[in-house]
Image 1 (tube, one colour):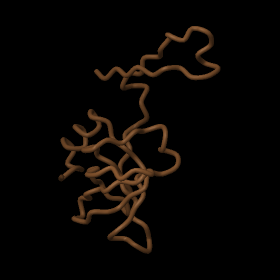
Image 2: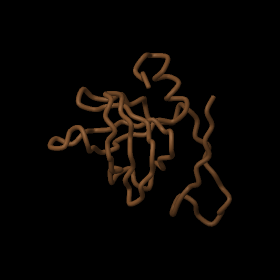
Image 3: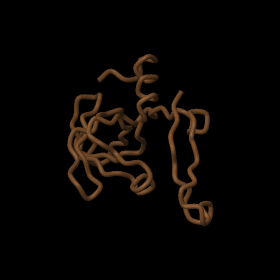
Image 4: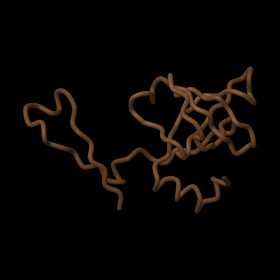
Length: 117
């Protein structure tokens, strides 16, 4: 069973700074699968300024930027499995990272046959 500890922020926190909320696997968002235009990939190199190099399942290495919605919510590290949405005009070279999988989700992807890296 996966247990994560998240600090409550702002109004939720109140005056008790040490209070934490325990997140279980049931409370996490449902599993997100890549759409037909998206590709799974592995973060190979962090470049700074919200950019990283990702080795994708289709054989291309893309320069990707982290989508604005994810910037401060999901921190991406080397070796993380991500969903990349390739750009329309530089399909083989660039893309946007739209999702990062957690460890238990990566194991599920491998057992279900989605991840072939």
